[in-house]
Length: 210
Image 1 (cartoon, rainbow, N blue to C red):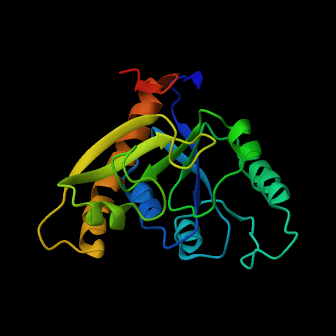
Image 2: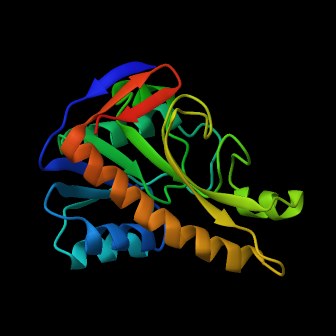
Protein backbone atom coordinates (compact mmCIF):
# COMPACT_ATOMS: atom_id res chain seq x y z
CA UNK A 1 0.00 0.00 0.00
CA UNK A 2 1.30 3.42 -0.95
CA UNK A 3 -0.21 6.83 -0.48
CA UNK A 4 -0.52 10.04 1.44
CA UNK A 5 -3.33 11.81 3.25
CA UNK A 6 -2.84 15.55 3.45
CA UNK A 7 -3.65 17.48 6.62
CA UNK A 8 -7.23 18.73 6.54
CA UNK A 9 -9.11 20.76 9.13
CA UNK A 10 -11.77 19.79 9.81
CA UNK A 11 -11.06 16.16 8.97
CA UNK A 12 -14.32 14.71 7.68
CA UNK A 13 -15.01 11.31 9.27
CA UNK A 14 -17.68 8.69 8.62
CA UNK A 15 -17.99 6.18 11.46
CA UNK A 16 -19.24 2.64 10.78
CA UNK A 17 -20.60 0.71 13.74
CA UNK A 18 -22.83 -2.21 14.67
CA UNK A 19 -23.38 -2.20 18.42
CA UNK A 20 -23.62 -0.17 21.60
CA UNK A 21 -21.50 2.70 20.29
CA UNK A 22 -19.32 3.31 23.35
CA UNK A 23 -16.30 4.07 21.17
CA UNK A 24 -18.44 6.37 19.02
CA UNK A 25 -19.71 8.13 22.15
CA UNK A 26 -16.14 8.72 23.32
CA UNK A 27 -15.35 10.25 19.94
CA UNK A 28 -18.44 12.47 20.11
CA UNK A 29 -17.49 13.62 23.60
CA UNK A 30 -13.76 14.21 23.14
CA UNK A 31 -12.93 15.10 19.52
CA UNK A 32 -12.09 18.77 19.05
CA UNK A 33 -13.13 20.95 16.12
CA UNK A 34 -10.22 19.72 13.98
CA UNK A 35 -12.33 16.58 13.33
CA UNK A 36 -15.95 16.50 12.16
CA UNK A 37 -18.06 13.32 12.30
CA UNK A 38 -20.14 13.89 9.18
CA UNK A 39 -22.17 10.67 9.44
CA UNK A 40 -22.57 7.43 11.35
CA UNK A 41 -23.57 4.31 9.45
CA UNK A 42 -24.56 0.82 10.55
CA UNK A 43 -25.35 -2.57 9.09
CA UNK A 44 -28.23 -3.18 11.52
CA UNK A 45 -30.42 -1.19 13.92
CA UNK A 46 -28.29 -0.53 17.01
CA UNK A 47 -27.86 1.75 20.00
CA UNK A 48 -24.93 3.47 18.29
CA UNK A 49 -27.33 5.02 15.77
CA UNK A 50 -29.44 6.36 18.64
CA UNK A 51 -26.33 7.88 20.22
CA UNK A 52 -25.46 9.54 16.92
CA UNK A 53 -28.97 10.86 16.42
CA UNK A 54 -29.01 12.25 19.97
CA UNK A 55 -25.82 14.14 19.15
CA UNK A 56 -27.46 15.63 16.06
CA UNK A 57 -25.34 13.61 13.61
CA UNK A 58 -26.41 12.35 10.20
CA UNK A 59 -27.10 8.59 10.31
CA UNK A 60 -27.69 5.89 7.73
CA UNK A 61 -28.55 2.19 7.80
CA UNK A 62 -27.55 -0.26 5.09
CA UNK A 63 -29.06 -3.44 6.49
CA UNK A 64 -27.18 -6.69 6.06
CA UNK A 65 -29.29 -9.85 5.96
CA UNK A 66 -28.84 -11.32 9.45
CA UNK A 67 -29.82 -14.82 8.32
CA UNK A 68 -27.11 -15.09 5.61
CA UNK A 69 -29.74 -16.73 3.44
CA UNK A 70 -28.67 -18.65 0.37
CA UNK A 71 -28.03 -16.40 -2.55
CA UNK A 72 -27.68 -13.20 -0.55
CA UNK A 73 -25.71 -10.72 -2.65
CA UNK A 74 -22.86 -9.50 -0.42
CA UNK A 75 -21.26 -7.63 -3.31
CA UNK A 76 -24.43 -5.60 -3.81
CA UNK A 77 -24.51 -4.80 -0.08
CA UNK A 78 -20.88 -3.63 -0.25
CA UNK A 79 -21.73 -1.37 -3.18
CA UNK A 80 -24.71 0.11 -1.33
CA UNK A 81 -22.75 0.90 1.80
CA UNK A 82 -19.84 2.25 -0.25
CA UNK A 83 -22.23 4.58 -2.09
CA UNK A 84 -23.77 5.72 1.22
CA UNK A 85 -20.31 6.49 2.62
CA UNK A 86 -19.09 8.21 -0.55
CA UNK A 87 -22.13 10.52 -0.60
CA UNK A 88 -20.90 12.02 2.71
CA UNK A 89 -17.50 12.90 1.15
CA UNK A 90 -15.32 11.65 4.02
CA UNK A 91 -11.58 12.07 4.32
CA UNK A 92 -11.44 9.05 6.68
CA UNK A 93 -13.74 6.13 7.49
CA UNK A 94 -13.47 4.74 11.03
CA UNK A 95 -14.64 1.20 11.74
CA UNK A 96 -15.73 1.43 15.39
CA UNK A 97 -17.17 -1.90 16.46
CA UNK A 98 -18.37 -2.60 12.92
CA UNK A 99 -19.00 -6.35 12.79
CA UNK A 100 -18.93 -6.92 9.03
CA UNK A 101 -15.88 -7.58 6.92
CA UNK A 102 -15.77 -4.90 4.26
CA UNK A 103 -15.48 -6.37 0.78
CA UNK A 104 -12.73 -5.84 -1.76
CA UNK A 105 -14.78 -3.30 -3.72
CA UNK A 106 -15.34 -1.12 -0.63
CA UNK A 107 -11.71 -1.38 0.46
CA UNK A 108 -10.48 -0.60 -3.04
CA UNK A 109 -12.71 2.44 -3.32
CA UNK A 110 -11.40 3.95 -0.07
CA UNK A 111 -7.99 2.31 0.15
CA UNK A 112 -5.62 4.04 2.54
CA UNK A 113 -8.48 5.92 4.22
CA UNK A 114 -10.22 3.22 6.29
CA UNK A 115 -9.10 2.99 9.92
CA UNK A 116 -9.94 0.17 12.33
CA UNK A 117 -9.32 -0.32 16.04
CA UNK A 118 -8.37 -3.76 17.35
CA UNK A 119 -8.12 -4.96 20.98
CA UNK A 120 -4.62 -6.47 20.76
CA UNK A 121 -1.11 -5.57 19.71
CA UNK A 122 -1.20 -6.70 16.09
CA UNK A 123 0.07 -8.79 14.43
CA UNK A 124 -0.58 -10.85 17.58
CA UNK A 125 -4.13 -12.10 18.09
CA UNK A 126 -6.05 -10.95 15.01
CA UNK A 127 -9.71 -11.80 14.59
CA UNK A 128 -12.86 -11.57 16.66
CA UNK A 129 -11.53 -13.26 19.83
CA UNK A 130 -8.39 -11.22 20.46
CA UNK A 131 -8.96 -10.65 24.18
CA UNK A 132 -9.74 -14.30 24.90
CA UNK A 133 -6.78 -15.41 22.78
CA UNK A 134 -4.38 -13.13 24.67
CA UNK A 135 -5.59 -14.50 28.01
CA UNK A 136 -5.37 -18.09 26.81
CA UNK A 137 -1.82 -17.58 25.53
CA UNK A 138 -0.68 -16.13 28.82
CA UNK A 139 0.90 -12.92 27.56
CA UNK A 140 1.95 -10.28 30.07
CA UNK A 141 1.10 -7.40 27.72
CA UNK A 142 -1.63 -6.82 25.20
CA UNK A 143 -3.17 -3.54 24.11
CA UNK A 144 -4.91 -1.61 21.37
CA UNK A 145 -3.96 -1.10 17.74
CA UNK A 146 -5.19 1.48 15.24
CA UNK A 147 -4.48 0.28 11.71
CA UNK A 148 -5.45 0.81 8.11
CA UNK A 149 -7.86 -1.71 6.61
CA UNK A 150 -6.61 -3.76 3.69
CA UNK A 151 -7.98 -6.88 1.96
CA UNK A 152 -7.19 -9.19 4.90
CA UNK A 153 -8.57 -9.51 8.44
CA UNK A 154 -6.63 -7.22 10.81
CA UNK A 155 -3.62 -7.33 8.48
CA UNK A 156 -3.37 -3.69 7.40
CA UNK A 157 -0.45 -1.35 8.17
CA UNK A 158 -0.26 -0.22 11.79
CA UNK A 159 -0.69 3.49 12.57
CA UNK A 160 -0.42 3.46 16.38
CA UNK A 161 -0.38 1.07 19.35
CA UNK A 162 -0.59 1.33 23.13
CA UNK A 163 0.12 -1.38 25.66
CA UNK A 164 -2.20 -2.71 28.34
CA UNK A 165 -0.79 -5.03 31.03
CA UNK A 166 -2.53 -8.34 31.69
CA UNK A 167 -3.12 -8.63 35.43
CA UNK A 168 -3.30 -11.74 37.57
CA UNK A 169 -6.93 -12.78 37.83
CA UNK A 170 -8.03 -10.89 34.73
CA UNK A 171 -11.18 -12.11 33.03
CA UNK A 172 -12.16 -11.36 29.47
CA UNK A 173 -14.50 -8.62 30.74
CA UNK A 174 -11.98 -6.92 33.04
CA UNK A 175 -9.15 -6.99 30.49
CA UNK A 176 -11.37 -5.85 27.64
CA UNK A 177 -12.66 -2.91 29.68
CA UNK A 178 -9.10 -1.66 30.29
CA UNK A 179 -8.26 -2.13 26.62
CA UNK A 180 -11.35 -0.14 25.60
CA UNK A 181 -10.30 2.73 27.88
CA UNK A 182 -6.96 2.91 26.05
CA UNK A 183 -8.62 2.39 22.65
CA UNK A 184 -10.89 5.41 23.13
CA UNK A 185 -7.96 7.71 23.83
CA UNK A 186 -5.85 6.22 21.03
CA UNK A 187 -8.35 6.68 18.19
CA UNK A 188 -9.02 10.28 19.23
CA UNK A 189 -5.29 11.00 19.34
CA UNK A 190 -4.78 9.45 15.89
CA UNK A 191 -7.63 11.47 14.37
CA UNK A 192 -6.46 14.75 15.92
CA UNK A 193 -2.90 14.21 14.68
CA UNK A 194 -4.12 13.11 11.24
CA UNK A 195 -6.23 16.26 10.89
CA UNK A 196 -3.25 18.46 11.75
CA UNK A 197 -0.43 16.63 10.01
CA UNK A 198 -1.76 13.97 7.62
CA UNK A 199 -0.02 10.65 7.16
CA UNK A 200 2.17 8.81 4.69
CA UNK A 201 1.84 5.12 3.72
CA UNK A 202 4.87 3.23 2.43
CA UNK A 203 4.19 -0.49 2.17
CA UNK A 204 3.59 -1.77 5.70
CA UNK A 205 4.73 1.46 7.33
CA UNK A 206 2.48 4.40 8.17
CA UNK A 207 3.67 7.55 9.85
CA UNK A 208 1.79 10.66 10.88
CA UNK A 209 3.75 13.62 9.55
CA UNK A 210 4.24 15.48 12.83
